[in-house]
Amino acid sequence: MGTSKFDSFLKGKTSEDLIEVLHKTQDLFGYIPEEVIDRISDKLNVPVSKIYGVCTFYSRFSLVPKGKFEISVCMGTACYVKGGDKVLEEFEKQLGIGVGETSHDGLFSIVETRCVGDCANAPVVTVNDKVYKKVSPKDVENIIYELSQEEE
Ligand code: FES
Image (cartoon, rainbow, N blue to C red; front, side, top):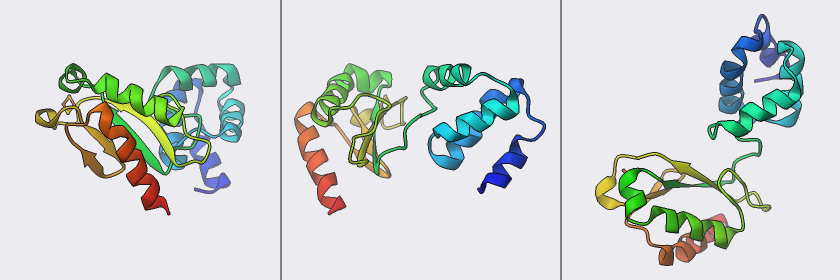
């Protein structure tokens, strides 16, 4: 969507529409770019600080572009009980980034998800369209390696 199209989407929107506008922005750009925050602030007459506050409060919104590989660790009950949190920690440790962040090379980002409907195979990790089942922290290194190889 070009600048003018986005601006016309913003037309008539007020501060009450902030969440809707941010959803649309996230869908369009894959994240909430800084320059778009300025435009939203201008058009909706909402302070930039408030928009940042909303973006950081809701995990659905990201202030940085997603990595090429979005590592999505299920934190639903079944996965959590089977050690999904340990798997998540291992990804964070090995990649040096936290949930909602993207690695410097732009390759990896980490997100948490709710139940993805495959509890029998907990803990489950999905990376883009690929599903990894019964993942243990020991598998993390291999998964990252495998993904890096795909990149080359
Ligand atoms: S809790 Fe993870 S797939 Fe259901």
